[in-house]
Length: 325
Image 1 (cartoon, rainbow, N blue to C red):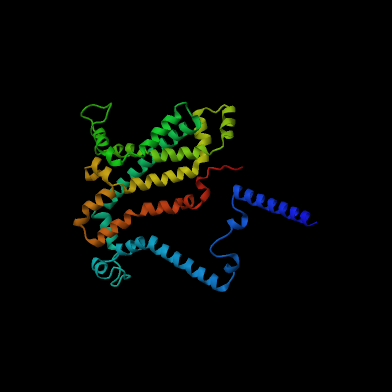
Image 2 (image 1 turned 30 degrees about the vertical axis):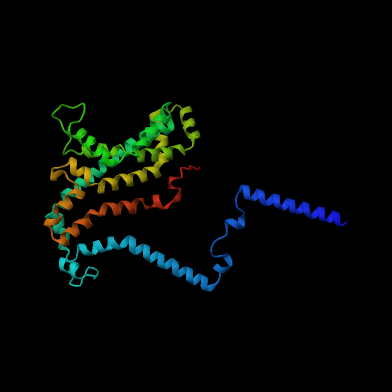
């Protein structure tokens, strides 16, 4: 009798051991996955709830101050006299507001002209980057020619080349572009800024990765119905790719808006220069309050871009590529 009980116990122990081994091979058990620093029982205690609420509030206030603090200070200083900004930089208009700073910055420094130049550069960079990224990503992901892996590897290799290494040969190409007469040049021309920005390997790989996640059944059905490559790209792929198009658009506009070195090299004439180049040039000749007003005006488009496209970044499914329905 004792032998039978011991054998039964050993079998049960063996089964339990095997079950634990299987759980360990397939992944952690449910209680291990749910385990955290604070247990569910402790979370229900009033003291723990109050402490965690205070920590969350402290983190939220800290993030708001760190993220919005510089922007709000710039907005305040844009309509604050210079003496007040220097003597009491964190005071809220101790001697009143000076709204004339905005009009002086817009007219006397000719912010309106440089603002228009920046908008044109950003729009052109946005268009050409979208054109190159979507067409190249479509060719590598959907059309998939035999040499697509080689092209994909070459595009990836360009990400490891420092941008400063390409600066001199790219500048010489702009000064004396190929396939044009010897005396032709692209200096002081929007194309000199648009085309180098269009060749963005990161955007191409980003769009290709998104296209890879689109359902192939839709492409096969479109081809069965007689859709050619262009029709498939325009009517099927692009409408399904609105999230990635929004992300690339934000990247393109922000990069063109803040770029300084390349526009300064290829746009030596101040009548063609954007805000990122012209504002540092006039800083030494401008009052501080007017200069801060000009900086505040230059931040309007980036802030507007964030407000319009914030949902693309906040939704975790924005780059998931899953198509339902």
